[in-house]
Length: 301
Image (cartoon, rainbow, N blue to C red):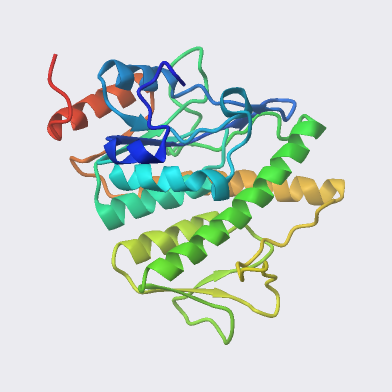
């Protein structure tokens, strides 16, 4: 990443102007972990403009290891707090669970200028992403059904995303008085109920959006069914070694949840002068330039 003007040390995190987050590493048709290069042209442009930005994409090719929240989050959090403009890429190849919650928090809690970039997942051409007839972008990971290795890799990604979103929800509950998580008693009529056998990604996103925008939100986990880790975080209950039909059903759920999450982001994030939703790399750069000029962070050519 030497060619880019990126924040790489905690002591310089306060200088960060743009947080460039979202879609990170992807799985190919064989389930191998690849570094997502969709944002590279945007990073090149930001560096050319001498904008200091943070890109949290950690990959073995560039860092010798995969992203580990416990290890890498300190610099990431400091950079996010310092940045005054956010760029989030939502890729059709990665689930984007934590990114969706960061989008909600940044927009509704901090009201920061933001570009949401729904990429097409293709580094060779710049085109619109796969989408429904109504125009909602879809979650279409590589090889999820036609490769056994890819299916198993995506299954692990599903487990990771489901558990990470639950952890992030608990993190928000500790931070925000408007968000309450309960494990006992019966849920109220307006409570968001999270069951252990579904991801509930869109529901968790909705809970964070409602709480971040000032609403009072109760999220209910049934203590009789929900398992928790040693820190009390609720766990997604899926078999470690599912049978073929079980895996197919759970991967169907994974794809449906990913597409529904993208739809909810489009529906629940309010659009304003300071929030741009774009679908191509070219339009992402144009939107970034407009917002950077608006905030007087760069000068016009």
